[in-house]
Image (tube, rainbow, N blue to C red):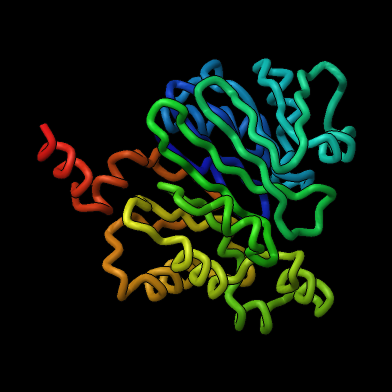
Amino acid sequence: MRVAALGSGSRGNSLLVEGGGTRVLVDAGLSARQIGRRLAMLDVATEGIAAIVVTHEHRDHTRGIGVAARRWGWPIYMSRRTATVCSALLSGEEEIRTFERETTFSVGNLEIRAFLTSHDAADPLAVTLTDSATGLKVGVATDLGRPTGTVRDALRGCHFLVLEANHDDLLLRDGPYPWPVKERIGGSRGHLSNRMAAELAAELLHPELGGILLAHVSEECNEGRLAREAVVGALADTGYRGLIDVATQERPTPLYDVSALRHRATGGRQFELFSDLL
């Protein structure tokens, strides 16, 4: 299983997840041109993408869905309410497959579970994606003001996490936004702070968590360094050996190999145990 952010931030978000030979994009908030360009940078052909899975209607997650779907024939999976509010982006030529929240559906060899988050959108969702052959599980939770019990439960046991670390509390307080915007960002239906992302990462930590990718980092009210330091600090006394990285707006991350990262995080212990049984 492999994961890469094509780009992440207030100007556009899109995540590539590959498992069992099936590749999907979680959100397409970049232009179709940028999506194609960044997939090429990862040596991934557009013809190999099986679908776009949309988490909510905000333009930094949906900007490219219509053009990309029409250009490359990608079906779009989204909730019924999200499909309704995204109608202006669609021409009617796209293949739209709707689902209900709190359900699990399959795209090729990926089992995808969609669950409700706390955000100021019509039907904001986070998702987990599980490789049906290996059981490796990736959790994606960006754009959430608070990590609800539903979010926590759904993300438990993930082998790779993509978590929002949108803002630093002090930089948001002293930043350029008007006060109502600051209240919205820091509120329960806004965005997750570095501090809260670190607390959530610590809560979700388990021996086989191979990597944490911090996403949706604000260019005005945060720094990637601060986001990473917060999570590193929260996990400092746990012995965690997995990846902690930060997605950026301008270019894709590497394609992270989830199986290899899990192996690194466990120090190979699960493989050693298996070999002892042979």
